[in-house]
Length: 467
Image 1 (tube, rainbow, N blue to C red):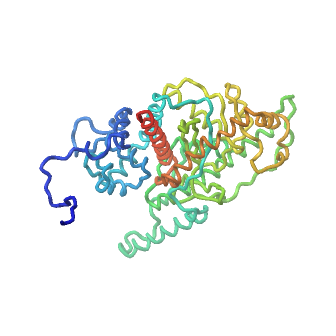
Image 2: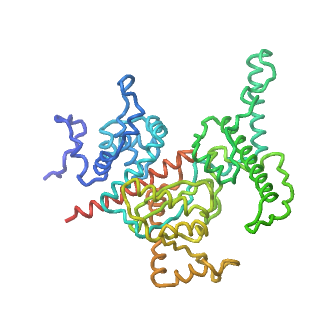
Image 3: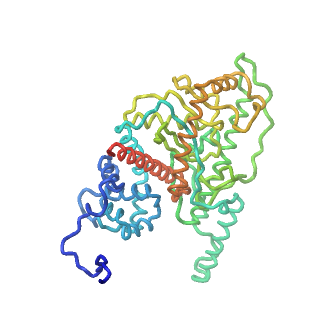
């Protein structure tokens, strides 16, 4: 008796058109993503296209959004990888309705709709809220350092940038001399004849400058020559802000008075600014910083998140400062704004964070709003208080955390937020940003956390549907 196998005839022509519904089971994530995207407000994507129908037909934004959301949920962020998956992966083919967007189309869509993609976070959070998954009794705030799309070796100081600009300009001159002879002479390129103008100057600290740059959201230039000029300009800007801040401080010390009316005393010694900016800047991603991690330093960003007890991310923001000090208030403000936007009227009862977020003023402001803040004044490996960190709020917080209730609430922190970062970095393989510039990175971080929430929502729906 011959062996019996199922037929495997690859040359067989299908007599009936295939149905995409037969390709995946009903509870597959792809169907859930499509259903979820149908519930999102995608008006911001559609308004950027012509309404008269002229021009070459574009891919439906709803399909492109679903494709990006599903790809990020699966940890696939490469535009070429997504294009390849639209050919080889059944789920991607279902999402794209058997179309294959070119990788350049995918990359341009992600760049063109940067702000709209960032807003998807709020839309997905709204779906979680309607499903009853956003419970804000206890929330945790923490940050994780993420690699930028840049190398530490691309960081240069002001003198190095200036030499490269002049060196590259000299190379261009020599090439033009060989090509045009004496017609152009030995002139520098026009872009070196004048410096880029400075729009406005803030009389404040470096953080004010960072906040202004975040609002400006300048894209990172593609041309290396343009990045060199932009890096030079930023270093000059930082020096000018430093000088302005010092001038304001010296004036305050000279003319200011204490609460009792007495003058503050003799002004400080005059400040002599350096001849050239003393800072450094990365020429690949101008917004990225050399941030400190447990293993040393990396060129990256400080990705902040606020989560609920069931690990739903309710705020996701990007900062360029390495320490978490001073970020407690801004992240909580973003959290409250996100909750208000999705119709959650409850205010958190307890906010937990690690020692790095200790900030007297911000903690007091949060407590005045009726939110209990639990932050230990001592790091986990300290056996005694830090010098000067005793009495007052420090002692009060230690007493609170020593109670059964306070200790139990704070111990929830690791189980709430650390798994979110662990799942993102290790299970989904997302430990480095692909885009450059703070605005682009923020858009990507919010899409990453939005897909985390969508995966949690999908798991919740499967559990409810299970017999």
